Length: 344
Image 1 (spheres, rainbow, N blue to C red):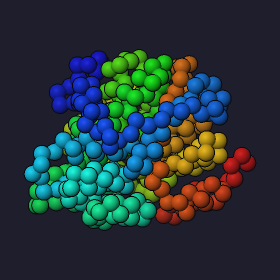
Image 2 (image 1 turned 90 degrees about the vertical axis):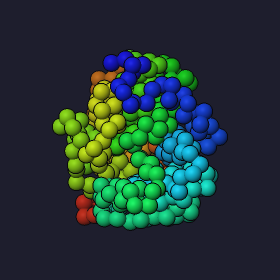
Image 3 (image 1 turned 180 degrees about the vertical axis):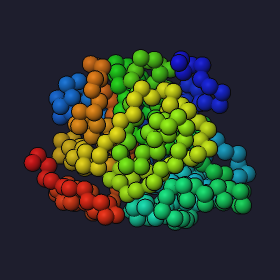
Image 4 (image 1 turned 120 degrees about the vertical axis):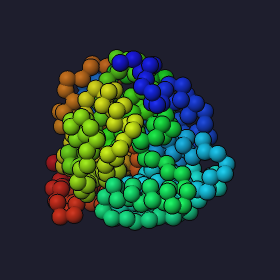
């Protein structure tokens, strides 16, 4: 497919370019830096797109700001469901516009992320133990209170905002051959895939997720959106469903992603250690799934050219992170991730 002639309703390259103008001054153009260690380990230039340097600590600010800033001036407020980073970004953008913001979250979301959202002045509703239950509350508030729902991923404006990452990478390094994108609801992967393939059709776009509760991977395999059981993960930002009535992100990911790869909790654990000890970067488990896939040998064969991995966020539980860095076992609601000291 040539993404220049996208399906009806899909964001276009023009929408992504417009998003870049709309969010300028709020979302940063983030650094794209080489990793000496990962370059040697992978046998090709390995670049890191540092989205965790955004003001909210995650890439989600791009899509949330694009959606919130595009709203008319008379809306009563916004509502969303979130595993953390989207809610923080919606709260940030809404505060900048002087709008009420309500963020619906499940009980699986780490408390550090909940408190970060409250600190921005948003109302937080904790509902159930799954993203689907949080989504149901978000939709109820939309229908009953007239708030505007800002989807974490299934929204053309959100997808266009995330697509600005793809523009930046290929403008800075047009020789990039492969993009490694953390995959959850698909807004990030969809936006980047549209932007990247419009500029360089041959570029490989690979979605990477955890191997427990990966809703987009299960949906692509089934050929339609499916529900999954949401479980605790080191990559908690990738949890949750994609919505059984998904309108955009599923179709875009199914058509434009070249592959989807799954990694284990142990592989995520090791990749978090690698990014810290080798590149001195603190990042969430969801941020390192591309590195985990490379280290586990799950990306072969790859084109010989440069690889860029999106390091999506830094909003994490620092106690758990400290435990991982010292090699402790991690208890994920009764499932034990076996630790080890880095280098052993």
